[in-house]
Image (cartoon, rainbow, N blue to C red; front, side):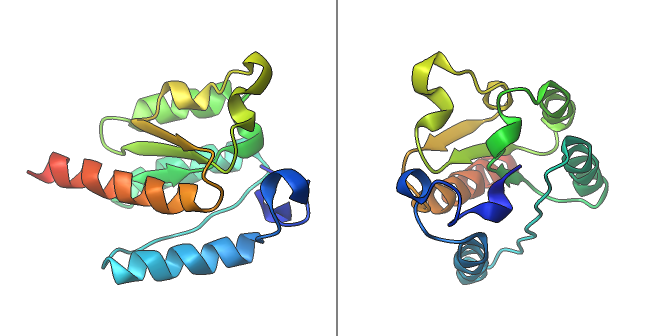
Length: 140
């Protein structure tokens, strides 16, 4: 939720890099590592849940997600993540520390295998590498 407005929404906090620029960066990064990557945005929690369940049915290996606005009240999304955890490892990323400022609670992070936050757009790269390491360990 709210990620399509990246680069324009609170640039003093989140920077000026747009979602399209993050997509290009991640697509190139994944390709350099021989990985396929699908990028999906939605502002509707139910669509996110449906996409995650479909990813399991389609045989996806892992999930790297910036839940953004879903992180605080996305209890249905959290339940979905818990249901797929045995077959779809999940790494959560955040651009800033905002998700934990002022005692806020990210309910989706309760289910993740790892949480990366505060590195700006590099959070995505670090999270991607972490997810690949998790997948390598599972395959070993």
